Length: 178
Image (tube, rainbow, N blue to C red; front, top):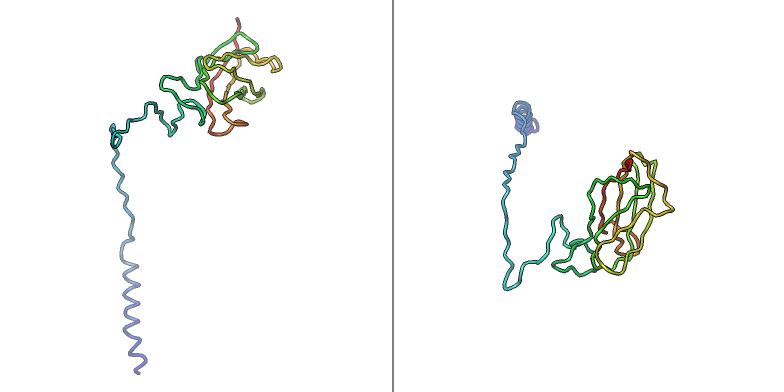
């Protein structure tokens, strides 16, 4: 009888716990949306150090140049000097870029249509002097068709081959009647 008496409190505890879990409402985690505010933040450099002269957004501070290139305050980086959407009457369109003083020796050019029926890519040597750089689709490239849009992509090859962090520009070009 002593054995049954010692199990009785344990049985009552188990029954009470089972009823508590069955009857009590389920607990739901509540998430309060974080309040966000948009404000201008100004950071003052410590000590007598000056703020960076040239900065760009997107987590990049190379200013349109290869990682090993020195960025000068007034220098333009690697940029396209034509509208993002252009029209041409030429079978082999021309492109216009600004290339800064850089260690890069070549650019990568890719041209394709929306269906990727037309796809061409090549590398083009850069001039030794920085500044405006114009080039046309090479003669060995197939001509582009009239009234069709093509996406072009040019990448500055900073090392031996085009890498994900290399600088790129792109746009769309369409051949129209002259």
